[in-house]
Image (cartoon, rainbow over the protein chains, first blue to last red):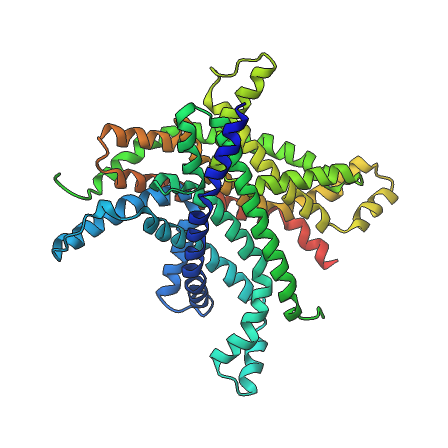
Length: 233
Length: 235
């Protein structure tokens, strides 16, 4: 065991954290509103869109994320190439920063997970809540913002936490898009001297710290939110 | 380059890929069996009254939940032989499938321990007491009263865990296992990286269909086993 390498590489792996977090946050920022809207279409059975959402969720849940990465990473450049050639845009598609692909892939998969999370959370809120809000004169939007969402969020929080942790873990697959995040950076450092055991121990520790921190933050937030929780009848 | 996208590659790839599902199933199947057994031990530790056992089992689950499969996979792949060397064992020439099974056993055990624990806790304690009071031994009470009820509760989560395992198993190609994903990458390499998209779509279709089959199968099992549950609720 090369201890000096172990310590040095730890900081190399740590330098990948901002990229991993950036991808996670951007993916969540896209996925949360989109997932919520699609969950609403599922609940209200909006024609066509709710069928589309159903197939979409089934696809993402049914296929490994690495294969979703492969598909998006090989299909988006093809599509862009066709579009660019059509409109004579002189831009080299192979110069696109892989982080854009990472945003697309992880937003794509997280949206599907969150659709199910929001759908089950909204399902726990009684219909009478919305009717009561209407009866006292709130608009549907107000009713959702003030009555339904705060209650549904309490139910959804643990699942959102799981989804976030899974998302952070999934960014480790960014290596397939040559995204310089935690795993790839440490692996590249290990390639020089074949110190793979040390490198993977470092990666392991970094993810452990990252995910425990995220879990801790969510726990704190859940406690804060629980004041919206209804007293169980 | 003749065509950007040729759908015929998708249909031609599927029959070539399907035989390699055998490897995928073998690895996933052994991980499920071993992982469930290990998960049972972990769940027992979590439910035991010994604080040390509880703490260490919970700690193990937290670690497993925080580790990406690919990191665990490589950690096992490089770490286990290095550890074994200290004891004078040479594991360098062993099959890659072994490391894949070890990895996913470790991971599946963590998932299963939570599934087993929560389904056990869902059964009312009075059930066990009632069984013992009518003269069943504790083992009989578990086998005849607790287990059949806990099984029904555990089934949907077990099914989800299985689907998750199958999907994480797709990463086994990274350490050189020639399963269905490994074969797909070989096909692409032999095409000099052309038509990769079509092969990946074929792969996605295979996984998608498999997941739907597993989902439906577990829904059926649940319906079958919950027959007894209904009568309990009504009485």
